[in-house]
Amino acid sequence: MKVATHQLRCTECGARIAGSAVNSIFRCPICNGLYDVIYPWSALPDGEATSASKLPNASALRWLWQERRTSTMSVDQSGVWRFRDLFPILEDENNVVTLREGNTPLYELPRAAKALGLNWILAKHQGMNPTGSFKDTGMTAALSVAKERGFEWVACASTGNTSAAMAAYAARAGMRSIVFIPEGKIAWGKLSQSMDYGALTIQLKTDFDGCVNVLTDLVNRFPIMLLNSVNPYRLEGQKTPAFEMVEQLEWQVPEHVIVPGGNLANGSALAKGFAEMHHLGLIPRIPKVSIIQAEGANPLYRSLQENGGQELIPVKANTRATAIRIGNPASWRKALRALRTTGGWCEQVSEQEIALAKAQIGAEGIGCEPASAVTLAGLKKLVAQGKIGPEERVVLILTGHTLKDSNYTIDFHRGELFNAEEDAAIPAAERELHAALRKPPVVLEADTDTVFRALESQMKLVHA
Ligand code: F0G
Image 1 (cartoon, rainbow, N blue to C red):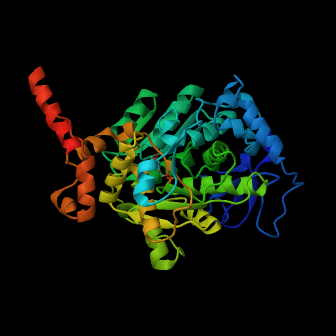
Image 2: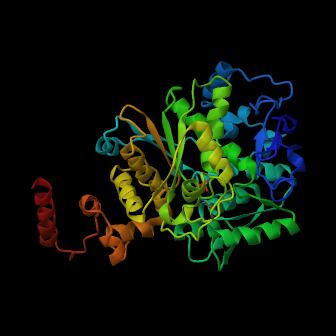
Image 3: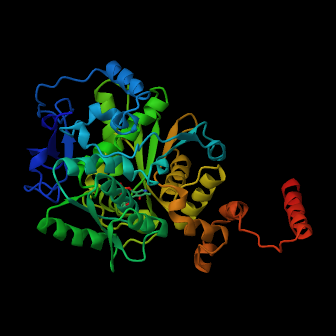
C-alpha cells in the first residue's frame, strides 16, 4: 500500500490535495466542503481525468480476497483490510491497527419478510463488530492513518458508538483519546466502553452538535487527529461492508440497501463502495441506498420535503434512538449525493415505529440497538408506498448491537418506554403487535408449584 496512490478531492469544488496536506478539520480551505478519498482508478466527474488510471482487475481481486480468508495474518483476517487493495491509504502495512473487525454476518429475517409480503429481507449485522457497532470498520482505517502520521492524540464528538470504537482502537495503538459526548444523552453501555478502553471522557452539557463545535476548536489549536466521520479515511473503512455483503451473496447485488441516518456519513460510504465495485466491473449494477431518520432528528428528510435538498434545515434533535440524535449533520451533502446517484429515498419514522421494529428484529433472535431498527421501520414505509416490491431483495444495515442500549429494551418490555400521550398515539393495528412482542420479566416466589402454575398459564396462552 502506497500513500502516493491516493488523494483527497473536495466534494464541492473538486479541488484535489495530497492526503498529508489536509487541514485539521478535514474541510476544503477554498469552499469548506468535505473530502472524498480518490485513487488513480477512481471514476471522476466528466472532464476530470484521473492520473494514468489502470483499473485493478476484478477477477484477480475476487480471487485474492477469497484467498486471504485462509491467511493467519491479522490484516487478512480483518474483514476491512482484506479489501485493502481498494483503499491504499497507508504507506506501511505495519501501521494497521486492527481488532479483526468486519466479517459480520448476513442474517435472513423471514418473519419480517413474510409480514411485509416480501420474499427476502436480509440484515447485515454491523453490531457484530469488536466494539458492537459499524464504527469499527471506519475507525480501523482512520486510526491507522493517525498512527502512521505520528499523532499521539485522537478525538471525536459522539453519540456513543464512534467514541467506543475510537477509544478501543486508540488503546490498541498505544495512543491517547479524547471523547466528547452530550451529557445524559447517550446509552450507558457506550459510555462504559470509552471508560473501559481508557479514553479521556468528557461529558459536555450540550447536545451532539454542541460537542462538535467544541471539538472543532480543539483540533484547530492542538495536534490532535479528528476522528469524526468528516475524516474521509473513516469512510474508506466503512465502504468495505458493501464489498463483504456482495461477496457473501456470491456477487449478486441486492436491489435495496437501507441505513439509519445520523451524522449522515455511512450511507455515502456504502454508496461509494458500491459505485467503486461497479466501476471496476465487480458488480453489474448498484443497489438503491435509502436513508432513514427518526422523526425527532430528521434534518435531511425535512430539507428534502421543504426545499428539495437545496439547503439543510437543522433541527433541535430529540429521539430515544440516541445514536442518531443529531440535528445538524456534517455529511448531509454526501448523503444527498448517495441518494441521488443510487436512486434511494429518505424517510422518517416515529418513536413508536422504531420500538416496534426493534422488538420485531429482537424476536427473530437477532436484536439491535434502537437506531438500527429505523431500517426495518423505514422499509415498511417504502413497501407501503410501493417503492419496494415483493421480488426485490433488501439488505438492512443493523448498525449497533442490542446490548449497547439495554435500558431501552427493558423499558419497552416493561411497558415504560412511552408516556401516556405517546402510548395513545400508537395506531390500533400496531397496538396488538406491540403487546404481543412485549415480554416483561415475571417475578415469582422460589417455589416449584408457583413456577409450574405460572408456566402452565403461559403454555395455555400459547395453545389457546
Ligand atoms: N446507527 C448507529 C448505531 C450509530 O451510532 C450512528 C451514528 C448511526 C446509525 C448513523 O450513522 O452518522 O453515519 O449517519 N453514530 C455516531 C456516533 C454519530 O457518534 O456514534 P451516520
